[in-house]
Length: 235
Image 1 (cartoon, rainbow, N blue to C red):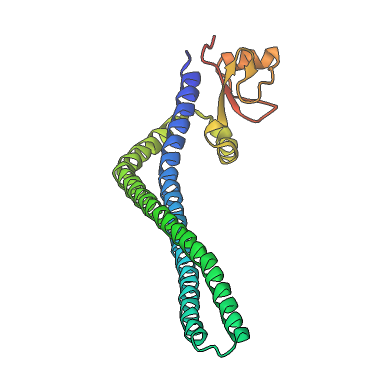
Image 2: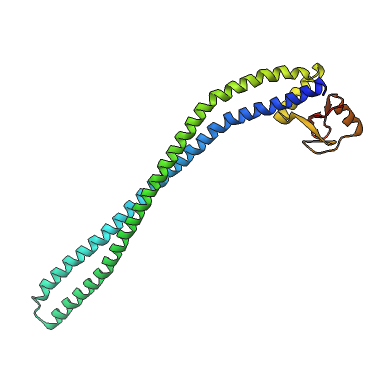
């Protein structure tokens, strides 16, 4: 393998390794932000659930109040019933008592049903609190993992930057400006090895002359995608 081609291959690998480091450094804060967003959403859901339970409890209490008010009314009407002077008054009071008692049957059923709903929603709230604790634990774990990893990756990236600057010496001086532009445009995929007789990035087949130039370590740029080409098996 010629030193020029070997240099391009090494340069490509350094670009890939450095990009992997940058992705690790970027991925940590993104993961933390995602966990924080999830945690905020869990807390909002819990707040909504608490408000929902409060509303259900208020509605249940209102049914209970109506029930007790009706019971008081029944007692009052029964007192009047005992003092009825005519059969008409007696029948009216009896009818009122029956209506109130029937209404109370419905109110009691509704009240008990709403209490069951309150209990079910409270149980769900407990589950949600457990999910919140899990989300908090996941956030803290992610922060701890990234805190431990970050210094190592930054040190590795700094070392790769030094190696990259050294490896870039294989780029002809007159091509360095173009190389910089290509790196700006394509990042770690600025360089591409041959795949048989084609560019491994765009898969467009090279001309016979270009293939020979790449295999003899000439500086060749893919006319289709603009990558710097090299061969793993030069002549």
